Length: 253
Image (cartoon, rainbow, N blue to C red; front, side, top):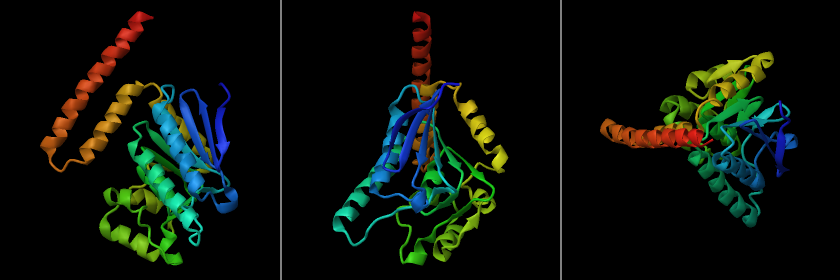
């Protein structure tokens, strides 16, 4: 197998690409893989690159040194840093929402606060069985204002209110039951499980996959089934057009 090509290694973010897979590693172990404004921008860049690179079919997100991601880090006494942080947070969340390339959250360490957004918005999320999850913001006098946004569609109201008001960590088993995770695995099975999902995605036509993911996201915005049907019909035409274009390209070779 070809060695990973490192595209970027700065601002606590490592971006690599290999055989259709882009890997984003959050690499700030001294701060438990927290996110300052520079890290936000690095993550946003990786999501945009995965979306725009025609050779990339899946984005894998992971952390280092026992932590997946533990949320934001900002000096709240510095107005300039606060402004950068708020701007970069908007940039990162916009990139996460916009992506139609499948995202696998490889939760190889504890996942707290803003890290929960990455997991919630991922297409698939696979976690080690000993990982802890949580929304600890309340314990430092804050509230997960932005982090809450994708949770509304995942966790029932009363369960989520308990999570964020108690600020208590919860297990991977509880996270899966709440709808955050696809699978929980032992450490010896982690890499092979991530590979299983990658291998499932790679053979699929990239354009068809992205159209399908966008269609699902658009359907989620519709309150009526008739509107969802219209979204499906529109995207079905796009799938046929993509397949025809792919066939023409094959014949031209």
